[in-house]
Length: 525
Image (cartoon, rainbow, N blue to C red; front, top):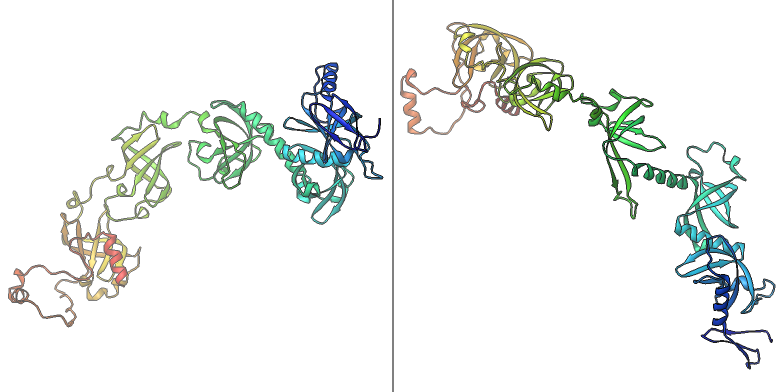
């Protein structure tokens, strides 16, 4: 039979001589059917060496019957003679080749190491499979690798976990790698060994986490401490987070107050859920493990509820303060909140005006919420209202000593005992006490009570000597007064309406112990 130069595939295969004359007709469909029957059932795997008959040769690929129901394909380039570049096989020839992959219903074959490498690398890249490569040399930024006869690059940071002390010691060694970049048909390759390790760890982590259920108790070891919680290893390199609020019923600011790295602990599984990183495009969800330590302990809140009833009067220690109140520890691990409005009878005051961390205070219980572990407390309710019993302590004409709280342009606020704050108006500072209006906070001051107004909760002080007159008011240009104002001036002094000490900075309706008055004075200053 003459050499075949061209082959056409149809239901009935025909061979044509170089002269163009039809010489014979063979039924290759029948040939395939007979061969399949003779082979019987077979299984095929990637990397397997198979033998088959060429049934068609196209411009790019040739099809080979290897006894499979699916077609097997091999590049025509691998059937060419390297010396003359011509196809060295014809339809009907038997060849051996290696299965390098599967593409839909087609089996991909190769006989060339170079071609095998290129196709296998692309397949490995898309299938996320590992490939073995040898370190050829140390180059700028990393290593040159040899993988299936192709040149590849591995960054220095991707060859192993941790710092590479002596890169040259790795030359000649072979490692398994993950292909993280495949471009230009395999001419631009970047490989990573650490990425392969991460994939293996993630797979192992998912396998371990898939077996966990909420409520399981595990042995763990503390591996990292952060301000927001502690990371613990539950085995096989799988870690989970114990949030700072789940470490102890006792209030702590940081996990390091109770834990240290390397410490062995028991933890309770709270939840295992998928978490996706939205900042990374097409990122796979990861499994998040939430753990607790405190829930393996008895709840001190439940134990303390027998003594903590609404209306109960208790003693506690201030453990921390905020701008809205103070937290008081009533029992180990049990705290209640005293809102700033319930810290004392003084109005418009700040938390630091009443308590500081470490103080022991008397409180009464306003409410208890067992479900949320919240207790509302009051210092006011545990003490008497000083304005209701002020007559028991102070009277007009009495000399008292107190501590300066603040000095304003219209007077000095003085803190007395029993929760009372009094005002020494500027007009009541005697000649012998000039400069007292500049008193500093914390200074001691002695004065005489001249007015007690229980309804308005005011106490007025004076340092004037008996018979000493008030300073003459400064004259200022004022607009013409109305007739009713002039009539008021002509009335006897004892019948006139009371005047304000300072109409611009003193509010009759405000309390002497109001920080609103204090801030108004400071602002004017």
